[in-house]
Length: 476
Image 1 (cartoon, rainbow, N blue to C red):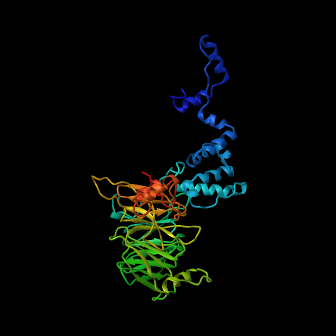
Image 2: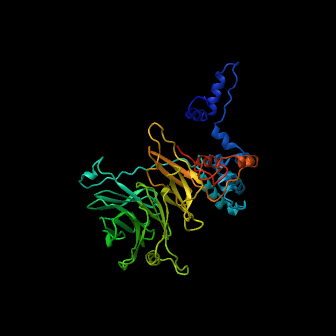
């Protein structure tokens, strides 16, 4: 019964009373043996002494440890010991190779140790974390138009800088969706006359920018009801897309041949803007502090990625919204361009504040990689993608702009063929893989190029022993 019947049978057997057992014993033949009642696996695990549970947790690998601490309340309680977390952190390759010191195993450091291990669970895509939850949102419009009919006009989407709010818009409506609340809901709904070419919103959902015509951007204050249009910007060039800084002080627009940055102050003059010539891009994103701007291609050809940095500003002054606008609009801008990369996003870095790395798709090697902002041509941490079907297609290119978590541990990317891949990002992208002593001599005498730009497959195989030459975990 224990091996072949469902769990309900086991639960029913455990509910037998003493009278039932006595009656069964009286009817049993003298040649029959008394049955042995075996407890369920869950009861057996629950009755294990704390010392045995601790030894199992010490012997388990980090992936198994992350699952065992969720087994039941007894295992969870036993696992809350600092030396267990320090031991498991030392076993995580992505943490051990980052050269970060592990906090001392004392009770006061237990919350910090738990947070560090939780980051490694996400970064290495342990089984305990791979339990995706999908939320389906149906947008129903009350307007009588062809765009509101089922199977009618499709929608475009844009997220706020930190992903707290999502914009969905077509030719008749703009929806502001709150995705940071426990329950996802449509926060605001606006009726429009025509489909915007592009739209963007701040994280606090207070400022909305809409590219309403070929050369005009309307800025709305959403704190009022109905929303109030603060002012309109007349651009010098026809933009392909727009982006707004997290604080809502600066607006950037990309056009064919350059990028234009404008101040959004209500008292801003027509001259408070700057334009820089560069290769065409069709996606823009400010860094969270608003001091850097990333432009990249998603649908355009040829591939290109551009990074603009606000000129030097007096560090003694506070970085207010007015100062941020002055940083972008009072000095000459110089672009940092790469013609090998596309589909680029920021990789957030809480430790250093300003981002130092980008996650881009290298068209030359047909794979994602992490590159530094100061040199977009170099980067040796590769993230392999799905293998294309040779009969149907020769290349399997990304079809969407990647997205990252708030702390940059995970990045998701969509590929043609309805596949979404999730990559774990190493904590230290500067760590260099050292060959084992047994193979170091043979490696130096071989003609292989080793780790680097020339071999992305080799980098993916070394993920458990390095963070510099490693690739992200592949999810099929």
